[in-house]
Every structure is written in structure tokens, then in C-alpha cells.
Image 1 (cartoon, one colour):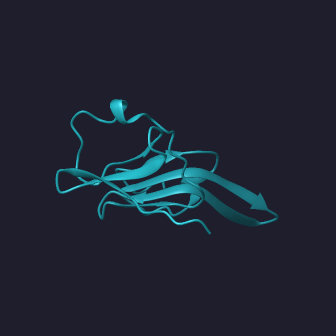
Image 2 (tube, rainbow, N blue to C red):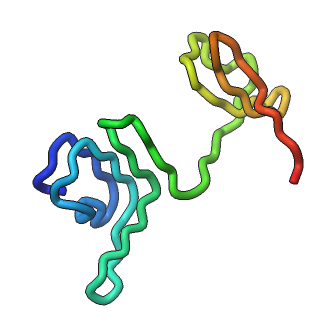
Length: 102
């Protein structure tokens, strides 16, 4: 991505993705297999659209209810270790995300 601008790139050979990309976030690595570059990115983001893709598992470190953000923002999420529940902040309130066992 040497010709594009406003890019954030972390990882070995990650910048080889596309020379004209702009406003991108790339975290991962490119791996050569013979003459082919296999792009194995953990995180891909586009600052112009605000969309971020995690290409694997996202782990939230559990925190106690008492330690959740004091001034939360819309859409924040955390794993509540006090009640063993995933929480999301919507419309100025914290909500449990209903979970059923597989």
C-alpha cells in the first residue's frame, strides 16, 4: 500500500495487499507460497466506511460490573464477570445479550 494514503498497517508483508488502497487498517501477515502471496489478515478495517472485520475469534476479557466504563458510549460491549453475561450499551442503558447453550 505504498501509493495509497491514510493507511495503518501492522504485520509482515501486510502492506503488499493493494498499492492503491487508502483509509485502510490491516493487521496480519502476508505469507509467500511459491510465487503467490496468501493474505492472512487478522483484522481489516476501512476508515471511510467505519467497518472493521475480525477474521478469527474476538476474546473479551471479563470485567466486574463495578469496573465497567463509567461514561459508556453507544454500542460498547463487555463480558460481565459478576453475572457471567455479555452486555451491550444501547439507548443509555446496559443490556444483557441473551445467550442459549448450543
